[in-house]
Image (cartoon, rainbow, N blue to C red; front, side):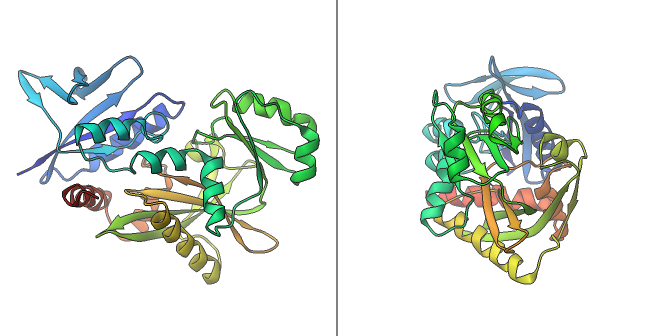
Length: 331
């Protein structure tokens, strides 16, 4: 019997439009012989099931919808919401209370990985190589002298809880720090100032199969600008090469780190870990962990899936069936 799968897309953050593209990609590629897909838009003012351009309100008491006189409930939910509330643990907690399985990580793991600064501190304690950084709490002013003392320029100033490079600046000198922090705070009051690691940027996708981490190919990102910003990611201002042009030793290390992070943090579903291979030492530095990575045609993970010889339909089936397996086991 076919399962009803709701595909969550939209959200409350600047990544709204990208999430719609990701969700639509999932919707278009689900196996109709196994699943009946429904597009669900999560908006600040309403949650709706969208069918043929018509909106049907989601009842938040049980996450159902009345459509043409029929009550629609969901066996599984595919989470394609980047940012708040789909990547930070909020939606996960709500769905856990309703006992509806969803494809991304659980509450704590989502909240931790969504906070770049806190996540990297935890991973550093486990021996994962990350860039040195300074964390600014809400209301805390930047001290250019301290940044200069502790970090080497250029530095990257980032909102700690955001994605798709929104609010990110590359800063070459201390005099530009204050403006960069102000810009980052248009996305999040918590800000991380990270020492720039100059080198080759690489993304590594991972998912679970039968409870074990399965690593996808590495993708090398060659931005046409100074770093991999929103324009580079989604408007063609970068070249993405799969597999990445790195040595076998670096590839092996990144694959091993990615599997370690996935298992150490008890992650679930599709995840992408981003690295920079430092140009002088040749060492990979983990930059961040994305637990709801982009799935649009322009995104990295779909490129890696195709390189692995899988269709997106087969890949999304693997993800959904792993979610069902976890739900059955109570994992």
